[in-house]
Image (cartoon, rainbow, N blue to C red):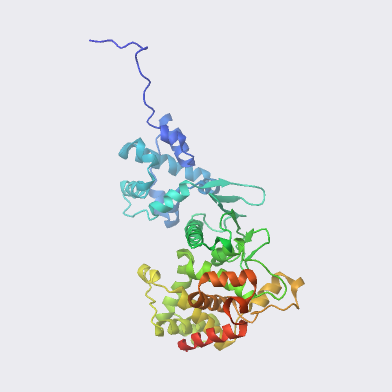
Length: 407
């Protein structure tokens, strides 16, 4: 028998080394409880008492600010389950975390799957959360920052909004860089979204800070922040707003916002709004009319996830533009601009007669006909004749002739 002296003994391997190096709050709480020998609570009754309680399994940083006591309790229970069932190395394995959380629910006798994707889990594990006096929740993902004064609903509601915005914005930046459009826009910057979400108009200040009241405007305002913001006297307002609508809301609309637009149209196609439309409800009439035009133009409106993936934003904006012309019920770019900048009242802006949807549809038409670089150059120079070979009225006439095919 060989006696091993203490001098010959190698220190034991720390199986929790990766956990200690992690910045994830839930792992720190779980490890503390695990090493102290604390037995976790059986949370079956908690998770089955309310569907909303399942969102506590996200365990992202902002959940601990929102409800620290409950989040810590869930962290302790999930940590012990993953460690005992799959081993300490599994605790930091983001590729299988969705699978592990589903297994945890099933271990409690809850026949339900945890639905967040591994990609979403990985993104939120990289999130940095901080606070200041005015903004209680500041969620940062590398160079993309969201400032929330407070969460008006459970914070898990904002996970999809922030996730899809980050994914959409990164895709947009890659597109602009790969196609050499950085001569006209500057995607190499920090993006700051201030999120009061109070309803109404969203806008971007001259310093590039974006104030978001309508979450559907996130991508649109990001294009403004990249430099599509110039407002000289006699400027082509339709071109500025149309570019932001085209790039941010037609080419790179987020899945989160797509669903908000697609679902009412899919319901309208099934007759869901017929009674309201018959009673004169303006929104129901609009949804019903656009859904009918969309189907007539060959679009697909199946109320399924697959149907959403087939939703054609290019066609949608064309039809909204046409509907607004036919009904003459729309808010023009000028109305919106003057509401935000009353000192500019009385000045002339070319294309101020269009709405946002119309400007986006017109820019989409021109981008397909002349190329997006030509459109961006026109914005930079404010010289339509020199860039397109036509002035605003002639370009608008061409676009209206294109729209006429949907009548």
